[in-house]
Length: 95
Image (cartoon, rainbow, N blue to C red; front, side, top):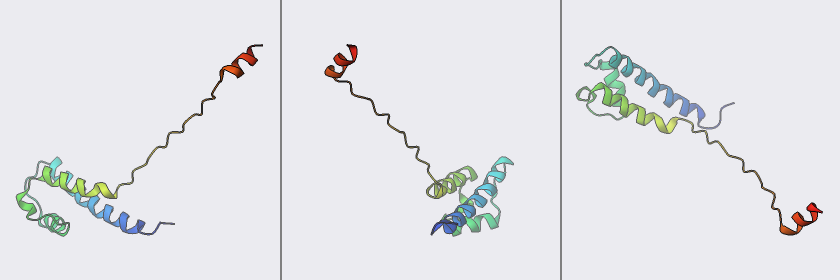
């Protein structure tokens, strides 16, 4: 079962991921011209005049937009309790 807002988060992440994949494929094939459908998707994301921005910079912008959607897993380190040994208990244990 998804938490409230989880489906919106996943949908937003999926849209960004699809655009990022398209941009990465263009970059991988050394394309310099942005297809209109990709440019339209970028405009919908709030990137103005995407045709005037180099594809590697567009990748960076979309990647930055994607970061807030990603889940950060915080690893909790368990603290080991150290037994405090007092001078009195050390002395009695030694006898």
